[in-house]
Amino acid sequence: MFRHQKELQFEVKVDRPDPQLAKHIQEVLGGQFGEMSVMMQYLFQGFNCRGNEKYKDMLMDIGTEEIGHVEMLCSLISQLLDGTSPDQQAEAAKDPTLAAIMGGVNPQHLIVSGLGATPKDSQGVPWNSGYIIASGNLLADMRANLNAESQGRLQVARIYHMTDDEGVRTTLRKMLARDRYHQYQWMAAIAELEEKNGVVVPASFPPEAEQEAQPHGLEFWNLSQGEESSTGLWATGSAPDGTGDFVYVTEPAAQGNIPDPKVPATEVHHDLDGKTSDK
Image 1 (cartoon, rainbow, N blue to C red):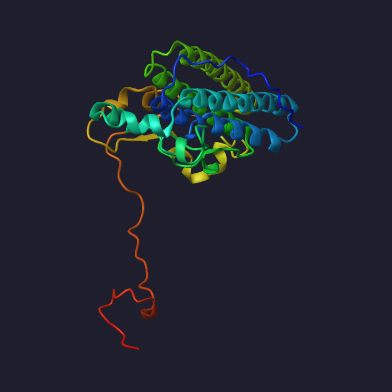
Image 2: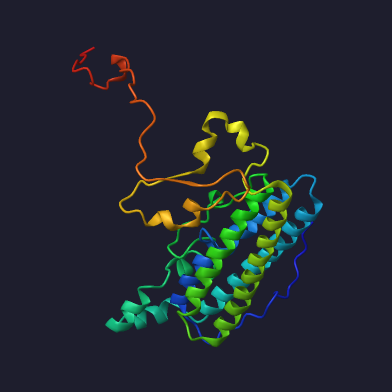
């Protein structure tokens, strides 16, 4: 059960209208790494979590918080659009300089949503459920969550420097702080799961089950010009799970065969055999 509370998690109050900034903020609302994505990702991971009540409860806690963050950003966008009427835009467009600036405004904020936020990114691309990951494997999902929070916080930080509106910055600072904590949270969960199950996903398929392919699981193949990559721990260190030491392969050679696919039937009309049919 979900229950809406009228108060926002943190106060949202802008100093002045800024429709161009409203367009930018659409990215951290409805973009690939926006609040809509993490909201749906955490909730679906929580909905589908089986037999791990501690993790399920955490996912539902944070997923529900993200619903509130979506509402905060919608309020922020609406306030940035307040006072942005079609007449004002038309008047501004008479000045070539202002017209160029107003060219960065999202027309859908006027035409489609009536000065409100939309479930889209900064380019007007609709939010896509393909952005989210809910695999049913806790470690894989937690790692995806850490990436999502890292990318989301990065984008909010970039937008922070696009404005000097202290009201907007106050809201963004609160979101940056929460995104920082959420990274700590996912790192803690990842460490706990790795200690319990191992570092490789899925742990239920161990290296020895790879049989004759197991040695390749420790090789770094040098497949680009230069050998600078040989100095990294990924090429000279040991596997985190203790299964062996990494090997740097300076001049890797192909170990497979040359594919020899069969030519399809003439009815496919591929023309590969030089013959044509007038039937």
